[in-house]
Amino acid sequence: MKSPVFAKPLSDLFKLTEPTCEEYERIKGNLDVGIVDIEEYQSAEGRYKYSLFGQLEDNLKDNEDFPLKEMP
Image 1: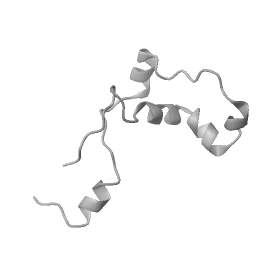
Image 2: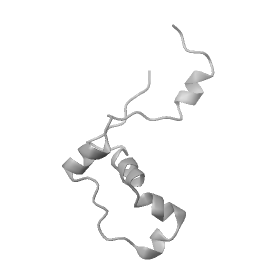
Image 3: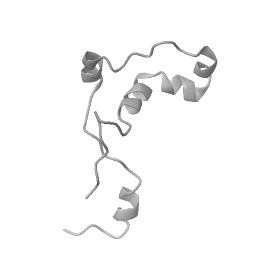
Image 4: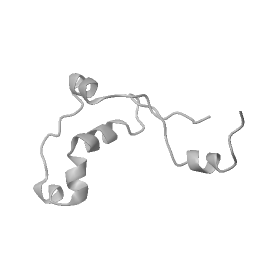
């Protein structure tokens, strides 16, 4: 089935990576925050960066463990 015309521009906004989960990333040791910059932590962006979701998002950025995939 062919995609509707509007789907291609919309799909260009998303990137696909290999899936992961919190437990797997903890086992691999990829969720260590390390030293927290307290001034940065006081902003909303800083709190997100040091949160579980922020760490998972950082792990999913284009790198050798999670290469970005082309969408069909």
